[in-house]
Length: 183
Image (cartoon, rainbow, N blue to C red):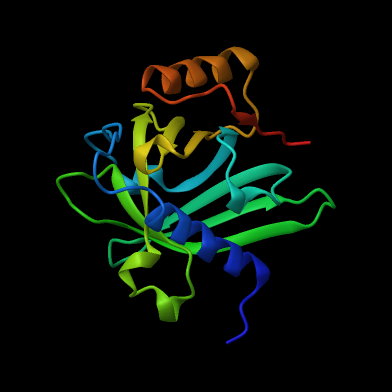
């Protein structure tokens, strides 16, 4: 099986998210009590993120598109522009693992034939969500990962700072955030 470089990167990302965070003594921020996946569907634009190795190639125009499936899962397509202007993308699958905690999704970007392996899934924690689904703050296990997302590709600095302040109030270390660019 010949895997594309981005699929390999996505696989490493999932393994990193799933396997490197300790399972005991976790300090996870609570997820939102409700997420309507049909309303969450569509494209979200990254405004900021904590640096991570699986997005190193992403230079600008980072987005994630969510498409609900008939089986209740969600297809996730992450894309960005590399420094040389070419597009990098990865397609994955997200599922609500526990209906009592709809803001906690299990996500995998592994090839379809390997998605049954339990250690290939990572936690995607929706920790803050606008009532109108115009912005979302997403984290990983133990606050190691953080993404500030909006429906609008561009937001003003005041809105971006308000979202960063909200993430900080949730206990995320925002001092090292990388701010996304669309240009």
